[in-house]
Amino acid sequence: MHSIYQNITTSKAKGEKLLAVLIDPDKMKLETVSSFIAKVNQSIATHIFVGGSEVDNGLTETLVIEIKKHTELPIILFPGDVIQITDEANGILFLSLISGRNPDYLIGKQVEAVSKLTKTNLEIIPTGYVLIENGKETAVQRVSETKPIKRSDIQIIKDTAKAGELLGMKLIYLEAGSGATHPIEPHIISEVKRQLSIPLIVGGGIKTKIALDSAYNAGADLVVIGTAFEDDEAFFDELKKQTVFNE
Image (cartoon, rainbow, N blue to C red):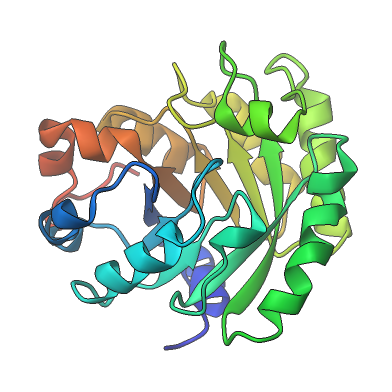
């Protein structure tokens, strides 16, 4: 498989928008994988992310193995913990929670992961993870014991994202959190986008095509959707491959 990151940067340069479907191993039953991935394959999705904040040991690898039976899309780990690392995937977002100040999630977990990662063939993509408040506590906030950045603190959001790039991150991921009540506002996305030369990922709370188009038009290079794709059949129908996004 070609370099995942190279494909993302090439798409960014061409103005091609990417879509990742996030699957939580703790919520996806193996017997439903085949039918769910069939829907993903019919959609405009370009990547599959696998991970969650709280996942039991072994679930991630079992799920990835099953997903691989049904798709050719690249499978990228979006791990909440070291136990979610598996060589069965194609790549991993090597996350640092740069919006928080808990050293375990800035560098501690990453150091812990090295001994496992060096034994894999995973493509490792350093990613600055920026959590934005969405009106309720998220699993990321609870598990990492960090506070998200307030949506009103746009300068802090911009500076945090840029600091991630200057530290050598290859991606910046703006996240409202799983099950967010509303997505990150377009003006925040566009303000961050103007600061960066690296690709920008946006996720959390995107449950309609209007919200998806809005994130793209504001500057997101790759958008991540999760629960909306699982729960809303109508939303899935809107994302079938013939759909053309507004410019």
